[in-house]
Image (cartoon, rainbow, N blue to C red; front, side, top):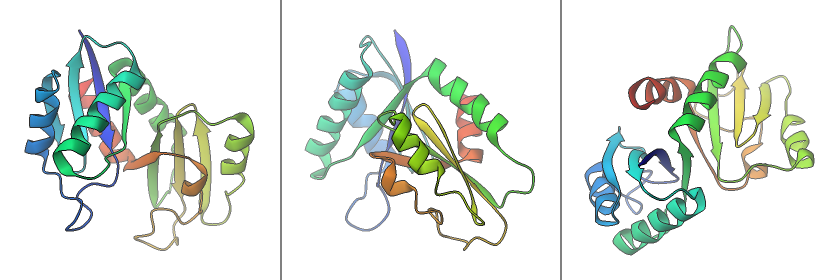
Length: 176
């Protein structure tokens, strides 16, 4: 059995997209996933499966979540090994003195031209760094606190969800 980490996009942000972590676990288990665990209530899920295709895992979860909730729940999965590597790289990419480090987890890898476009949004507010299916927003002191996309790069990333470097590091230590 392989272990994957799945990240749900745009849940628990308001009254209409509520998806408690107990319900996430229940649905994943009903779909046949095993060893299901969640971390905080923002859509971080660890699960084991005999499936080997990331696309099949994401599709099964998305379909099951939509049936249960009545709204789409984009899901982005990484193997345990992929996630451990991206967490290690995230720590290496960070810079001293940052105000925030957001890690965007992407469903699909960008083309080289798309990656260059994302990285070209870098400026006084911070720097965007793309590595595979991950983009890092390295935000400088003075960016507008509470703005998770001050560089306006998220719209260039496709289907994505973001976590702070702290959450990424915590999940890697807990699940990898």
